[in-house]
Image (cartoon, rainbow, N blue to C red; front, side):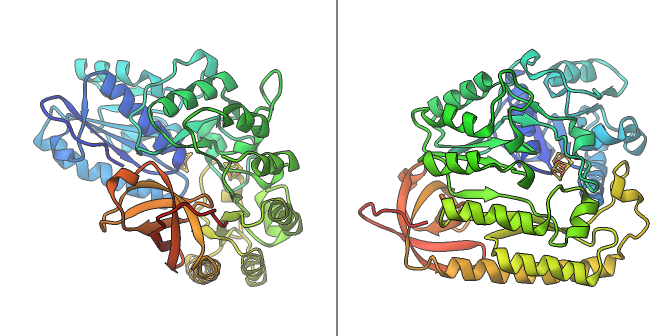
Amino acid sequence: MIWGEMADQKRFHIITYGCQMNIRDSEAMAGLLAQMGYAATDDPEQADVILMNTCTVREGAEERAYGRIGELKALKKRRPGLLLGMAGCIPQKDGEEVLRRAPYLDLVLGVHNLHRLPALITQAIDGCMPVYEVWKRSPRDRDLPRLPAVRTHRVKAFVNIIHGCNKWCTFCIVPIVRGLERSVPPAHVLAEVQELAAQGYREITLLGQNVDSYGHDLRPRMDLADLLRLVHDVPGIERLRFTTSHPKDMTPRLIEAVAKLPKACEHIHLPVQAGDDEVLRRMRRGYTAARYKEIVAAIRERLPGCSITTDVIVGFPGETEEQFEATLRLVEEVRFDACNTAMYSPREGTRAADYEDQVDEETKKRRLWALNKLAERVAFHINQSLVGTAQEVLVEERGERGTLVGRTRTHKIVTFDGLDDLIGQAVPVRIASAGSWVLRGTLQCAPVPAVV
Ligand code: SF4
Ligand code: F3S
């Protein structure tokens, strides 16, 4: 993602790969560079500093990043003054290996020392050697200065509430690169939400790899339900969301908080990963398919109309055809509003990478295709049931096709015609037609109660 351009200044360009955590980190890097007097540019040719914020969750993501940085090498050859840096999860995993693969980099930093960016850039400009600094562990949040940020969106903003993960799923690199869980003190979260409200933001998403385990490491202990209550009454904020939740940590207290708090939206992203108990056990997910379905039933009972989205991996080591079919059955049965799907990709350092029964690529591709088709069909049917209903849509921006674009409380994208003045407002929109991923509607003149 790229920030808007300003004239007559040194310029920076940030390329971001990966998850919402990385997008949020890039916002902080942009904020730090803006504080140093740099302006953003979306044209790498115009940039004095290019930073790539990387992801290593799958081999493909890693190869894409190295490929892109390789392309930028040509630009650096033409403009030797250009400062080229790599940040994020690849340096955190590979360490100095990054400089062996891309020796033309001027700067390499990890995820735990992001706040050191200004000092490292100054060092890189002044020196003739590449600057390499990757901290193995994160300083405690209370020891960190609050970082400035140039936000990606105008209407919605993401607030980190917990960093890292303690779950150690056998396929996942996140605990290795992001470290163990550290909850952000509630006072810091509240201050950031208040600041964002004062800047005109309307929607806040509380963010973490494992957001529903928030607070277990705080004294006094608290949980995500407490935090939602704490930030709920900040004036100006109309919607609250949180992501990503882990099924093991989803509690009746949290479901009850979402039901009781009017600003908490009826959408829960709850990664299931697989529908077969043996696969789930080997993934070390800590629940069975039946338990997962119980949790979904509890959510739907207390929050009728709540959308539930998920993540699914196909081709985990040893996954048989029958086990894959169990995943298809679960997707059909639970009726997810959307599935983020991926083929399993072995990551060095994770337990599953050493499993000997790896599934071949052709089988993974075939299963991914079948799963995507099913997920699309399920989503299409769910969305058809919304045609004719009125939905409260928070308008986020004018889209590339000229329509306004916003989201329902259930996180579905809605496009409709209207004036720019509506950006930032929650308005009633009657749904006229629906595809699997986008609803099309018309603005209602008078507010009508939303149906979810
Ligand atoms: Fe990775 Fe599992 Fe933690 Fe999610 S819960 S970040 S999949 S280790
Ligand atoms: Fe990728 Fe790092 Fe996020 S590996 S998914 S950017 S935590």
